[in-house]
Length: 161
Image (tube, rainbow, N blue to C red; front, side, top):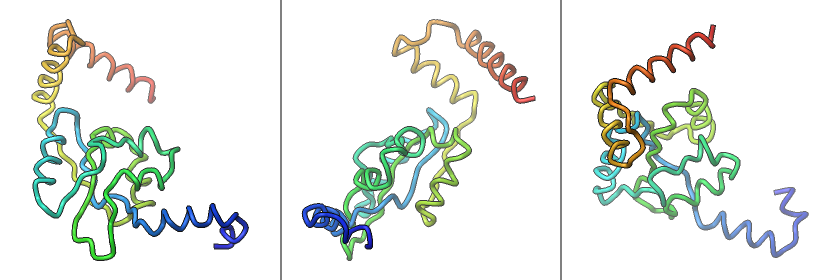
């Protein structure tokens, strides 16, 4: 509040109008492996009348857009009025890949629920391979892709030591 007293009245009105709109962060985050069903799970959740999703399925705040700030992130979700009776959240599978993200989430939203969805790794990899083939991104055989991925993993493991 001390800072606000130094600002012009126009800016102060703008700041208070945002605060009065009751933007709030997520109640839940769906995270998980790619091709594990995060999109389906989010759609099943929002079929419930008291669950609303954010503007985008994958907001990527904690991994790509953290520099945009918490205020920006909270505007990605429906407004919560005083007597609102709904939950809101998003599904960004990539959050599972970054060890620093759970701490960031907890620091900003200690009550948020993390819903983690996993899949048999072979089924997931084959599903991803088929998607890449459909999208023209992958011309190698599934077997070749597995061997290439194993070499990448071995390389990363050697670099850690």
